[in-house]
Length: 576
Image 1 (cartoon, helix red, strand yellow):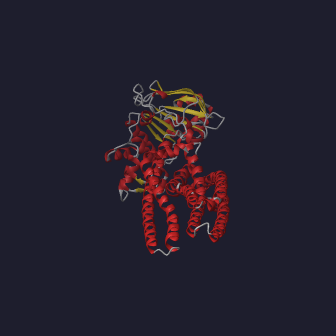
Image 2 (tube, one colour):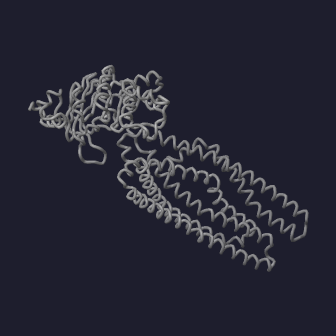
Image 3 (cartoon, helix red, strand yellow):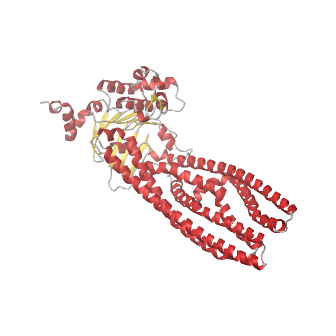
């Protein structure tokens, strides 16, 4: 919680002003019953119209002052809470952007989205309430009791019994409610996760006729959320009748004892009315505690979840040091006994991998699903770090490069191309800051997508649907390749990024890559594509089985011969 509320520091002045207005509003409100008692004793009972007008005018003035102070307090509270939430969102987004893939795997997307929306909103609302009524309510209780003793100590003695009991009860409710609302937020994560999976996979759900199955999944998650929410709200709401019951008993005692004292002539009627008013204000303030407990409990659970993300340690691998190379210059790559496993797993997906690639060389990587090809790619831009071994660029350890310099030198096209909302131009230019129209068109030409884009009614300004829903798989792949080419990278990584292209288009694309001054790594399942590379890397179960040219692998590897035979026929391998 301390980390989250540190974001309030820039707004100290606004908070001070808001609390000053709260105190002034509270003082004016506490004086009203006191002056009412004076008006009754000095004016009504004695039938003195001058005192009635005097005290009445003072009360009207205080009421107007209270109203103005309340409006101004709401303004400062709203300003502070909204800007506070803005700062947390910005810090949270920046923090998540710095996460490695290892850290991202610990926080599901649905959970992060809940933190961005629901959790921050809960805290924002609580900060607003904190500047508006959270402080005012307990101060009103304390001030009401103090003023009651000033008016008539004997009638006010009942508060010494009831108020401490109520405070102890409220603290117990707060502690238990915090745990209940923490559980609620976890169920919100579950609902968001199911919703996210269904919205992103709606086509697949319809194609497989799994609507009923997915609906049952959602009902189950939604039911759990409803039950946990109901349990938490019922517990907090159940405290309200208990609080009011105790306060109403106090009020009944004050009326009974006050009437008795008035008849005996030891207490004025105005004093009884004033203390009844203070009792009503204390009861009203205590009734607010239900909402305060509710808001504070949810805020506590939400702030802990946000603090968990904001305080997580990020490996400071992006320190800009003068002795570190700014970027890769030539594009040579070396893996030396590199091993790697994913977080929270026990099996190595890469096991003592050793190979090298010369500058401007084209290396094709082939192998069965799960052989470690994509995992190898993810180590190059340091999306993950290797467990053991060394990765070198231009004979320099990967750790010696700044993270920004390293990634600026790499053009990466992932296995599943991701397009962002916006135009086709925006998606290609996304790969390079300040990209010009000429840069975008040249990258599109080399990616073999320019003619198709030019034929569209809006050309490069054609809007891309969510995740490229209005484009085919091959079109999305070529736009993603153009986005990587526009960077003019020293290392180009294509992770099975030509799988949806026909052979002719793919051939033109590979030919266009010869004009780029970069080392190219291509993960592919097509032997026809691998043959066009300078060398081929054959992987299986995280290890390198063979490394060399097409002809060399035909001589060295039985597995490679089987792969070639499955795609071209046995006669191509064995000559029969």
